[in-house]
Length: 221
Image (cartoon, rainbow, N blue to C red):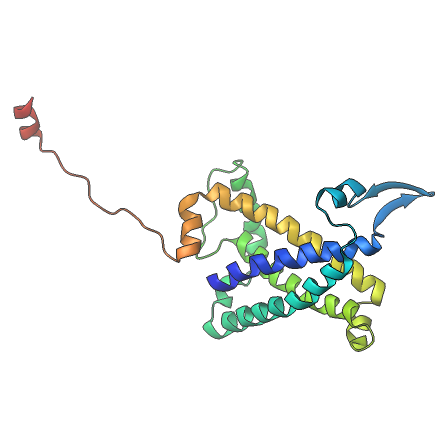
């Protein structure tokens, strides 16, 4: 599961980066009213700063290659989770949504006591399950706009080509939002928690403290 986690990070990063190269070719999502544009997701300076302009062909090449690695890694992760029984620790429970609010209040230092947890707390259960659902949604919407004729059934399922593209775009923004929250949470959890995610174990010092007898201490003084 750790391997899938760490493999997925560069895979998804490449998919988002190459997706931006593709999106530049048809940047149509913005807020307009009465012919005036009030908001654009990616202004021109953003494209120039990250050197995204005029790289549509490169973006398509990377996107359509690495999507297969992204899919294979996701299939392996979900299959292992189901076979090993780890899904029981990941799937949210009835009380998870209520406890997730308590976890948020604890992370914001508004609530002192954190709700009890096992391997994952309620917020992690919801987030990790949501990211799996988002991954499935990205694959379905991606194939719907990649091959709208061959995969016409997926395109119809997504409400048509244009709506499938909107869903794909929204899911991408969701990944970025998840990345930011995830990194902040790891930073707040500390280095020990981060290193245990890499190694799979955490070193705990259980060495007992030396006991100084009162009589010896007085004689020394």
